[in-house]
Image (cartoon, rainbow, N blue to C red; front, side, top):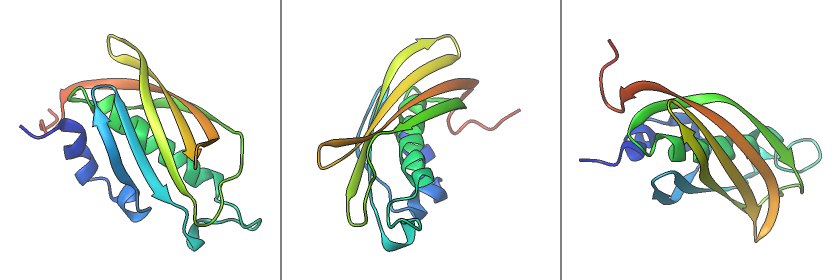
Length: 136
């Protein structure tokens, strides 16, 4: 049986368009990387914050869907600590902090060359059906 997070990832056109790649994947955990390209920088020649958040959100999605149940974001917050720059490879490491019933809490750290760029905390909500199962 295929890994449920990978099934979701194969259909994720947004992450693919941004060039994101899975580096590691396990129960409640994921590492995803992305190269900062010229079309990802803002008017200050820094990686757009929304794209740093997108990378963290994609790692979060993989981690919270790793249990096989369709799970979506209920919300998140992100703190930017350092700017990300053109040509850097960003890596987001998502980890499950708590899972209670249909709700989960996940922390994601985004790094570039070992430097912490951003800290993200996501809240998830399971929709109660298995990945690949047709909604009723």
